[in-house]
Amino acid sequence: MIYPWGTERRLNAYSDYFRRHFGQRVQKITIDAGFTCPNRDGSLGRGGCTFCNNRAFNPSYNHPEKSVRDQILQGMEFHKKRYRKATQYLAYFQAYSNTYADLDKLHALYEEALMVPGIIGIVVGTRPDCVDPLKLDFFQDLSKRCYVVIEYGIESVFDRTLLRVNRGHNVDSTYQAIKETAKRGIHVGGHLIVGLPGERREDFLETARTVSQWPLSSIKFHQLQLIKGTVMARDYQENPGDFMEFTMDSYLLLMMEMLEQLNPAMVVERIAGEVSPGLGLREGWGVRYDAVLRAFEELLEKHDSWQGKNFIATP
Ligand code: SF4
Image (cartoon, rainbow, N blue to C red; front, side, top):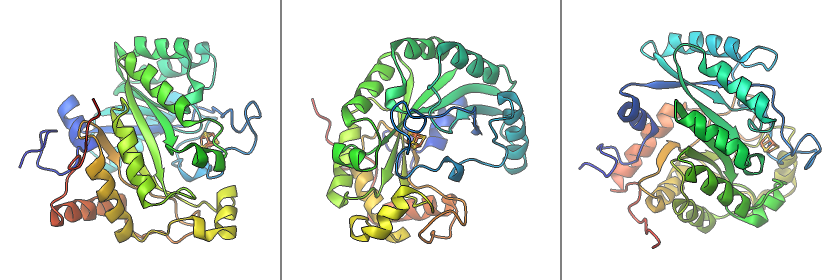
């Protein structure tokens, strides 16, 4: 069977989308451009989100002291060893809030990335409260000459959860930022955490239904990673009953139910995350992401399930 996204795979997968869009594999190169975040530098708060530890996500070639260009070149070398065929790259500004600076700085950094041969676009990770109409207009202009994704940390669609994890913004500000970005024709990505405290199975299904009504182009799911030393790790030790415990099997079953609610037009970038060994408080699943995705697609096959099977579009 061919699904609405044009393949026989049971989810609208990011890798297939890129092959359709660019005719080949496109590799992301992560960059730490030395941004901070209003939830850490004191303008909004100091502690940050209780789960935050950007160290857990940065590859070794990322260092804010290095120029953007050097990080990209080293990232390309790193990826060439693994994916020899990749010739097109996206510069992924991942660490902290990559729109949290004045326009001149944003302009200089993003232009520096786009000058590197092989870079065909940028992915900009940020918070919903770190964009404004001028910045979005700037990205709109950029998107007319290269591929641009603004990736928002949604994390949860419940205000009670955002409050508990000290996120510093509410759900409405997330929705408004996504809407304003999409309105300008910019691709909008979203990042969600599955397993934040106080959320249960029905909340996760509600999450999938909610984001399905938002103008997102792509979505990324991560199971909650409890990083040692974070405030959330302490919260977990004090209130373990507030956190869902997932084995890989139980997580994939939940993800399957969520995927069935998800808008089939939305490209699924990831269904789970990996964390560097030694940083996590709970034991990891001990498998690489490729194997997790393979197991997930086998599960979908076994249950005759697919993305959007139970999706209902609201008028
Ligand atoms: S918004 Fe991002 S960088 Fe800032 S505290 Fe939260 S997780 Fe950390």
